[in-house]
Length: 64
Image (tube, rainbow, N blue to C red; front, side, top):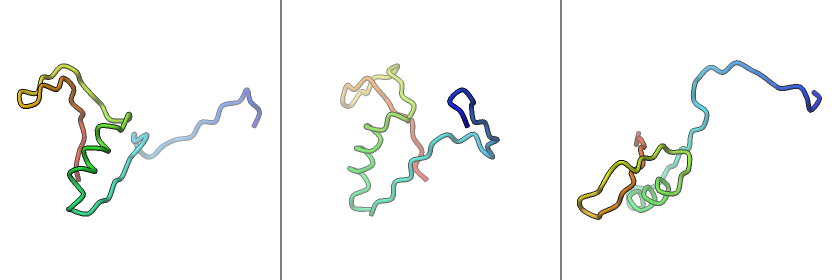
């Protein structure tokens, strides 16, 4: 393939990236916090205000 050609292929899913993190129950809370806050692929919003800590940013994520 030359540099001017582009590669295209069909995908079986809309998933572009998935970060799977496995941890023991004891380290789960701290590691989850560190992973979530530093993951640039997670959606974020600054349209929030944390009443408990005053933070102005939230990260959306799902724990399965």
